[in-house]
Figure (spheres, rainbow, N blue to C red):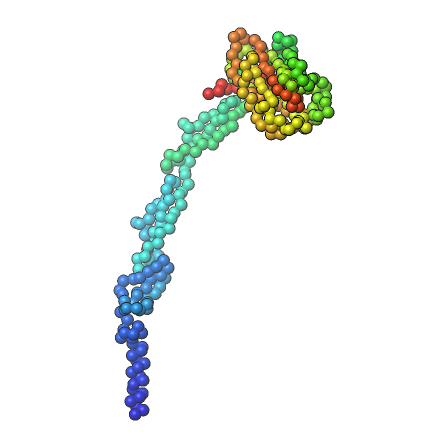
Length: 314
């Protein structure tokens, strides 16, 4: 009896060891199953999740499936598992351009106009430009001439042919007697940081200068300015001031409140007021520039006045 029981128990153990999934033996696929990290042979039996031959991929690059990156497009690297043929793709970044000098696209800077250095990619033809700042003018002091009011006007010349005229702001042709217009040696008047001798015009007043010009063209007008630190309400320069040339109003360049003009209190700083085209009927005739002010707004003029020839507006 004991011998029969022992034989039965051995048979049960053998049966369990052979079936695993409840069947006599596993039926594994010959094709590989795979994911991004490994491969295996899967059991084909119903409701069986057993695997065999599980292993990590062994990647080898397949150059025939890859695409080389260029300076205009990304490429890709393809690697294939030598065991299961699983493919992995890696994006290759664009390569750098191979820029070389491109004289045909370059131009030298002039006194007035920015230049550019151009380079061209020898692979794709892309052109890269690097700006070269304009050289700027090197004005040299020349002769002093008189305007019709017998004030000194100093002529400055640049090697490029452009000219600039300079005179003292206080050498004006006239100052209208608007409310609170004055000229004194301190410009303090209790409401402005002392900046030296200057002039103030307000309350509907105006101030004019006359400068003899010889050639027609486009000019820039600037002069020394000093705003009072307690200018009422931080006035807007566009609503308080204007510029006329030979009696014709021209656009004012500075805009916004006095605090945004970028000029330092306590001294006269050059402030570009306008640019305009001037006509000349006879060389040396005087060009009249006028600043108008519509209300008492504590902006003082002093130092130097400049009339500079610039490139004609396109």
